[in-house]
Image (cartoon, rainbow, N blue to C red):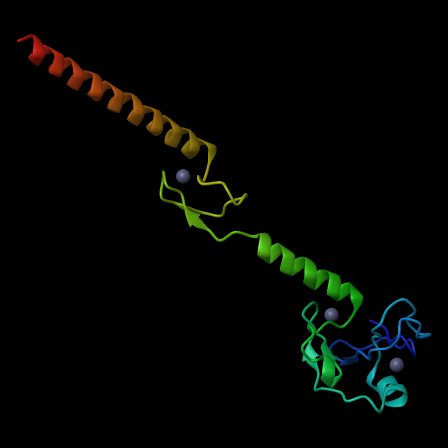
Length: 153
Ligand SMILES: [Zn+2]
Ligand SMILES: [Zn+2]
Ligand SMILES: [Zn+2]
């Protein structure tokens, strides 16, 4: 990544400074945070109260934030911000593995409401349900038949 003030390419692992500015700041118009090198931060934002750098959630590069914004997530650039938000959203969408009620094998559901590991298991669960219904229906007819025969006797 490049320093947005001096345009120098930062070394891997070199800390990036994220000063908060107005969105009309000349070096990053339209954005309220810049990504700059340590030298430029000393030169332009010396009066800011910098925290010790924390690894970026996207790429791991150390990110220095101002003390008042330390609760915000540690992000070195807008690219990493998007990546980190996307990763978080993916994590939220992902469902934990659960056992299939038919074959008892643990599987990761593709959808929140899928209960079975496969179509085959879903089918066999459906068939079992149907069987259970018909057999219980059969039992009740048998009981009824028995009762009526008792009445006849
Ligand atoms: Zn610089
Ligand atoms: Zn990053
Ligand atoms: Zn299964």
